[in-house]
Amino acid sequence: MNKLIGIILFLVLTTSVAKSQKIDNSLNIGISYSYNTPLGDKYTSVQGIITPSVFSNFESSKSINTFANYKLTSRSYIGLKYGFTDFRNWSNTSSNLFSNSYLYQHTVFLTTQYDILKFKNNLSLFLHINPYINRTTIKLQHDFVGYIPVDESSSDFYTSSFAYGFESSIGIQYPINSFFGIKADYGINKGWS
Image 1: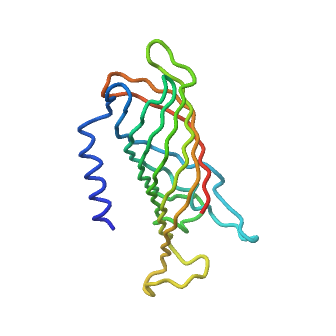
Image 2: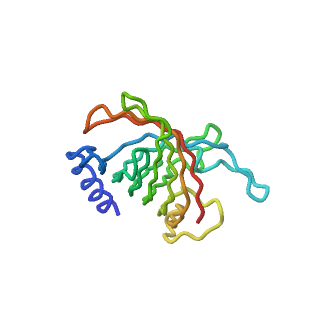
């Protein structure tokens, strides 16, 4: 699995030589990197048992995405995006239950973007609504739900599953030139498995 991740990252990083570019002013191809902060309650209750939350106790995550967007009109775009997100550094002040745990996701998005406002200096305020499918893999340290581990010498729990959902975000973007730009957005994500 690590070789596969290495090959994917190598392919993604080598395509970054092309940078983000607009072809014939209608196709935008590029690569992006983002730093994410999981939000939510630090504890959860399942059937009356209070335990630290897995997801919201990850200190941060990083994402790398490749994308291609096609300009439909002067303000709307449609495209595809592949993303890899990695959650590590689980931390909770009163527990080390999941301290060596990790979670990573491979996601394919159908992207839509609408520029709400466009200014003369090319700064734009945009809205995204993106349906997606993903594969999530998680490793949790310790047997906390009474499962039987595959490897009897380890109490780690591994699972992998597919999900679907959508993400929606609003943000600003500014193209500095035809190869480089800045983008900042705030979004929500809702998924089902």
